[in-house]
Image (cartoon, rainbow, N blue to C red; front, top):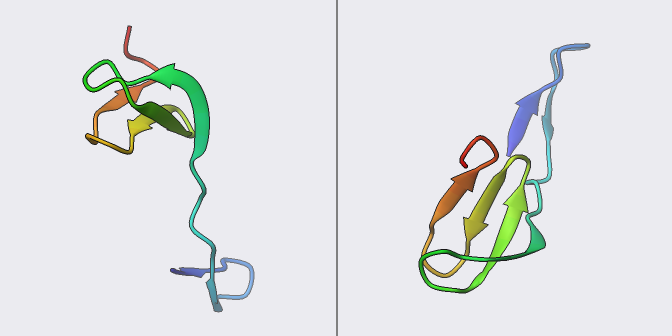
Length: 54
């Protein structure tokens, strides 16, 4: 992915952010969920939960 560096206006390639495994199971299918910032994402069924969800 390319992103513009505001300091000099040059486009640079950036690495995608890695998802980290968390110790939570998906509420839908029971698979391990992965964390990305404030979101939990199931790699099996795609269920997503946000940090603002109860």
